[in-house]
Image 1 (cartoon, rainbow, N blue to C red):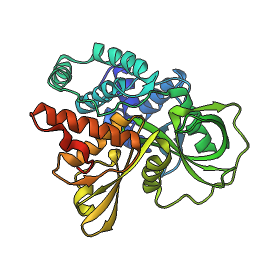
Image 2: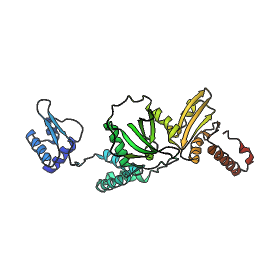
Image 3: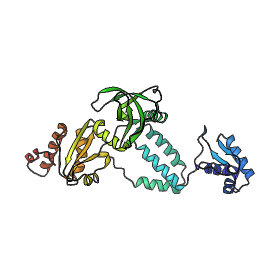
Image 4: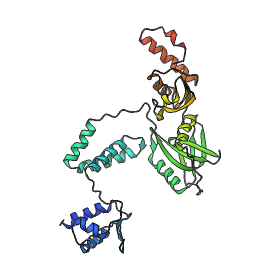
Length: 332
């Protein structure tokens, strides 16, 4: 039989599994009598861990929410998963979370057994992280927490907001969902003044506290994902473009990642690629995803993008000794 301290840790580990344990099950796992189990449960309670018990044939034990964070006992695969997840979070775009993730990672790596530490080190040392075409702005973790709480509690949210034209506005909305798309965070909300659903960039809003009164939830749109992607293309970027691609929509959609934009069919051989970015240069990168697949396309707006593509086209032609005047057309 395990020593008392080791047995308590084992019991705590079992109780962390989200299920209701019968006393007989736990006693069998720990190889003790039910009386010893009851004594061990009482010891955990004295240490501040709320172990809830119910009587009767269907009774059992489960670990409740308490003031103390219990020690986590992880198996090898869980330890590797947690470590990799923390390292990924440390490279994320939420301000404050990266520092917290690094501190937690340092604590966990310090106590990892050698064989797990070697697995994690091998994975880290032999993995390269390729950044996206455009790294998004960092989002304040506290702001995300405020918005998430308002969504959960169905409380109106008031905030100052910069739209894609950098105009300062004040909004009052019913918040419903946070959406993480690529490097950016978005809030799907019902705008009370505009009497319509809106998709809003979280990095552009500053909440005003306290939050507003509670509201009765509306029926959320069924096309939530499409609403976010279309809303982003339409309003969340400083520069937007609708590029005519001379290929079938299904063919283009299979080759363009959703984070770059959306594809809308015109006919069997033509479609529109809706995309957006905070700069004409980043917009050109998104459109470059079409060119690398050998697809012809036509760009007519915005004028900043047209001028940039002409300039880049001339640069490409000069690089191979071609006549730069041939780049006057902006059809890809």
